[in-house]
Length: 304
Length: 311
Image 1: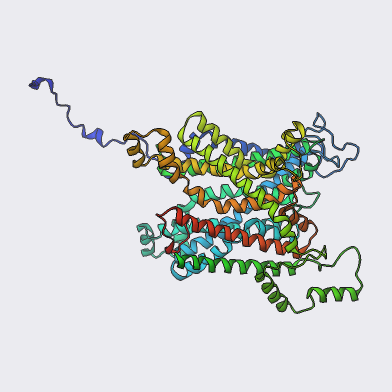
Image 2 (image 1 turned 180 degrees about the vertical axis):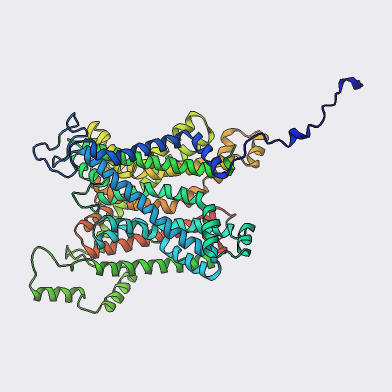
């Protein structure tokens, strides 16, 4: 069968159009933020977290009751118009205590993540960049520490050093930084042989500049994910220690100590456990979904 | 293989040595001596107690003695209850804790892999979302809160299970469920993501194109490969079960090693804290080593001889 030539038409090569950029160019972080914002669960986590932080800042001022004042006439009152979340066994307002506790629990989580960040980035960055014997030695040291069961070590420290906010954060970070160090080392190891690092070196940049300007910023993604997931585990550890009687000492309140105080009374005064326990779960949930969302948004393989 | 195992064993011994040394010196730093109490002891009794427990010797002799004792599986006496030793507590409580722990691990493995497999096979359908919501809940709700919630509703309100204690198999179900909730969620997510990865492989398409049914593909080709990450999760899993058992045993009043340990913490019974910590460390480090070796046998693609730890 023959097809007549008239049926064909020259469309031409529109060279201008072939070169045209149809999509605005996106930087890496812009792309990440767009993909993160498409993740409904992660955005829900962000909203939840913002609400929790706002309440932690303003919550204690929203009620006329103070978190530490005992009122022995009004003990174990159920939630009502006077005491929105009820009162505990010493008549203290659970609403005020919950948001005071939010401050402490969030502080512990964020402080633990920050300490992990500084030690981990320093240790992992140095080991990865120097390589060779120094790397071998530094990472073997981390491996040995890694072998020690985390919570056992934390418990041991709390028993010996006494119960305060400082010792708690110290105990959590003693082996907590290793994960961060490993991640940073792995990234630095693969990034340091890139051409731009060589170029920077050729131009006379020192260790500090190469680290601060080139290597660490390019490792920020995994660092951010690790930090986001450290916060809930620190909040969990704090609550766990409180359950073991190794938490903060009164009148300081954290969600962990409130939940552990409320536990024996669950049958008759369930609100004393309900509020702190719910907020522990919500906070851990928020950080977890944000961390997962970040990890997905940062993974170029998941780009559609 | 033998070289790898020897190397790992040496690491394990070194880690253990560090743990023992750290606990020994940390406990010496602890405030007060073992016999400080409400009653001031007469100096003669104090001296003879010190003599009895070897506390009058210089620290390096005590340290050496302690290392030798541990090597002979002797974890020392309890300073609070003078007729009991740490070995008694372990022999007494560990079988209970082991039973609870194994039950929890089995629940976590069974439910976790099941949820993960369903989620992966029904990817982006309601079953997937449902399973992942359960998993996120399991991760967000700490085990001790889960324990309290289960106890409150299933035992106190609806009387389906006994509230506490350790008498029959029915008594073991609630604590095991509470203990299993978080690891189950992790296993479900792990299984799901590795199933999805395996399902995208060419050999799955080959299996499909030669006419194998969904069930045969899932059982013969997918699960076997997808469950490998779950095997490597067994190490952290056992650590989580051990530490989780401290609070769970306390909440349910179970006479296991975990509740003995918690009791010794609130009594500040330093020798027991020290002995049980060392015992747990031995158990956990050995468990992790066994899992790593088993992994090498299960997955022939892994060459253990390289001696590098997996990332």
